[in-house]
Structure formats: structure tokens, C-alpha cells
Length: 137
Image (cartoon, rainbow, N blue to C red; front, side, top):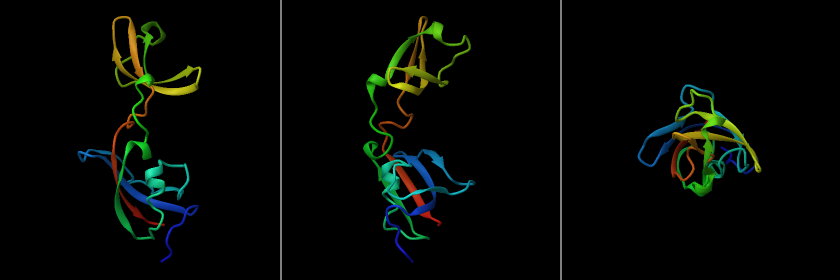
């Protein structure tokens, strides 16, 4: 079987877990994930990990934050006046925000009396992830 090289279209089934084994995403029961090997269509740690594999191969790869969703950026956590949110806002809600850097998604992490604390980091930023993957095509 031919080994995957950068630029090949590949399809994988995967399970993504935190280091403690908590599953955070999976293709189980869904179509395989399709992407170009070695491209920036996916986090680098997975996109590069398939290079050298072949159809039918399975492996587990540990992806540090730098090869995943990046380190947690403390400056991406901001307090916004509560008046800018709907009355029914709750922790965990996600909103589209506009800043000098452009549009971004923010997650509500705390609601105070006057301010709402939002986090623009990806929910998995700063996390080391373990991907179990199998090349299916």
C-alpha cells in the first residue's frame, strides 16, 4: 500500500481525548474526517501525523498545545459590560464578537453584577490532546 505524502487527500476515523482520557470529539457514527495531509485544514499535530501512514493503519498521537489549538492566551479573556448581553445570558453561551482584530467567537465564562467575562480562546487551547486515528481512505 502507498504511504501518505503531504498533499494527499485522506479520510480518517478518530477519537480525540484529553490526557485524562476524557473524549472531546470523535468521528464515531459519522463520516470519516477528510483533509489534505500536511495542510493547515486541520490542527498541525493531526495533519502531519498521517504522513507516512497507509490505508488501514492506526495509531495514537499526542498533540501538545503548540501543534493543537495553541496555548491559552490570558489576554483573550476580557470583561464586557453586562448591558451588551441579552438578559438570559448564561455561562457557556457563545457569541460572535467584533473587535479591532476582526470577528471572533467568545464563550461566556462568568457573569457578574455589572460585567460578563468572556474568553476568545478555543475551548481546547492549552490542552495536550491524544488522537487515536485510523486511515480509511
